[in-house]
Image 1: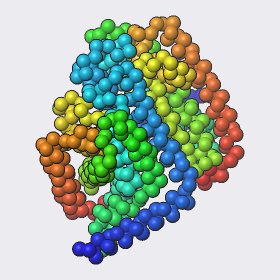
Image 2: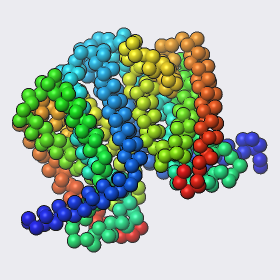
Image 3: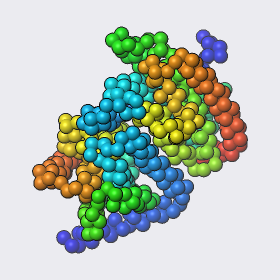
Length: 266
Length: 265
């Protein structure tokens, strides 16, 4: 039975989920590890600052504010992007891209959809946790839903930037380092390590001028009720602008770079 | 004894030469891996810069002291990465693909061969960067300098040996599991805790990081020892924990070998 335009996309989504969960223990390890460690590192710093160090507020935030931020940001950190861009650069480097060029699917989109599947699964799981939290704490479930939507937009932008960067593999031996550098910068400027309002005002232009804060910081602030509906709408609109701009960037970089592809080794 | 040492030194010399030739061929790899590590260091330094923009002292650690700690941590990690890291990435293949067969037939200890085949010489530059950071912040951190720099060398060696023993303890389970990827990832998750001074941690977690998963030995304990010295009980703890890991790794290695089924085990 044909599903029309959704046909191969639906199949790719299903295949991606099956692939990710084939090794269930590893999937669980990965999920728990990536959730637990950033939260634990943050908590340790807040504990040292407030409980052991005796501080009452830091950048206008109390210990409770920090803990709330940490717990909520962990949910959105899980959404913020997979390793599909690494998969793309590996295909270019090893010549595995050839298989996909012969098929009637867009390779960038195909790889994204396959990698999106486990993220959607995790997003659903995080949403349930968020809803459960909203029953006991003064968080709005609707805000949680909006924040998750923004985080998913962040996931798309993150992949798009990675897909554009992966074309470096057409010119150099590989783009692994470029993607690693991007991920390291994202880990700080997305708000995954610390709330970005801790960065002094004089340097705030750094994180405000990248889309990375839309991945974790902006959704967390909205879910916690620390940003207004208007601000959220602006951020959602901005994320759409980034998606369109990055789509153009992918068209440009892949259009130019694919001409250099030599099948076995870019 | 002396002849054995000379034989091992000669083999290690050959391994270094082979690795140097390989790295000279892949020059782009040299630049890119350097870039990744430099950015990682900048991110770690930025993280603490942001914290110190909001507080003057973090649990008794001033900003120069934390930067000094980071310098020592980066240098210690760079040494481990240079000499051992890549061998551990290949460790799983040794067992799963039966490549250990070849090593077992050689007239030297297979663990020596397994851990000395891959040397990432370019990472020495990261060691230099780490040391530059440590030297830059040493006076402001209260480091006495002079002959005390000799203790830095000893504590860096301690950090590398600790990382080697801990990483080995995480890898050895490949004899019992089909894939060791998840356990290896777990090591790197714990490794994140090594990038914070151990005195920042609540008592219980700190105790774990000094005993069960002693990643604090990689940078934090050496930095504290260099700056302030350690209590006698702490020296005893370090010796006890490292001895335990050494013995346990040896026992697990032998038990693993008994279980090893050669090719496609």
